[in-house]
Image (cartoon, rainbow, N blue to C red; front, side, top):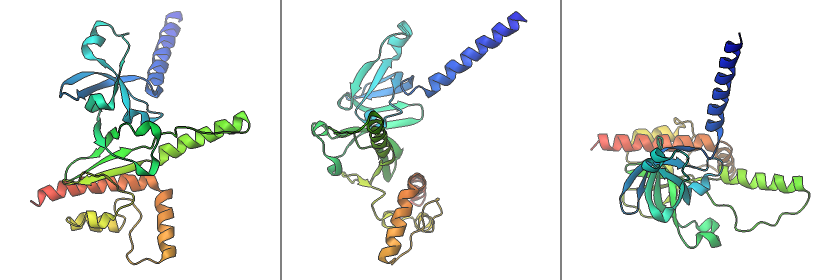
Length: 247
């Protein structure tokens, strides 16, 4: 009976450890880094899952040789300037040049290169981009109020991401939430029609809407942003697949 209890406790402890590792936003995961000189190195990458904007600036990386020699070795910090791309699991982060004119900050003026998570690749390539926290904040009030304000700012950053896309040889990324999607998808009528009618789970697009109708549609798109984002990515993937098939 004691042996059974011991085994159960060990099993429970192992299960809790696995769960904790999965929930830990700073855990190292298998990945690959392509450095600026083109060298590709396998190893372990640590991402900021709870603050993804930092993943656009730097990662912590342990190469496989160093990890094999010492599993407790500390990671090395690599910045966007050091890399071309990195991969963690099935997620790929590319270096993208983007000047965020809507949110210029002192700390971002030195470099406009960001490691953005790739969403689609092909005729239409797209990436997710997060704004960075403000250089300075001036909070006042109780400690609870300050904590609430900080939590709200973080939530605003998490929900305020952009889907930046380029088509063919375009150099300047555009925010897919703000562009004419029907015009962008026009070369593949099936995809264009499906997006226009809300077939990807997005809000349907009605031509020649009045001001009030446009305001309501904009509010709906904001309220259902995750669904809109998924729809945009799905439409881009369909477009890329079908435009190739028709050539």
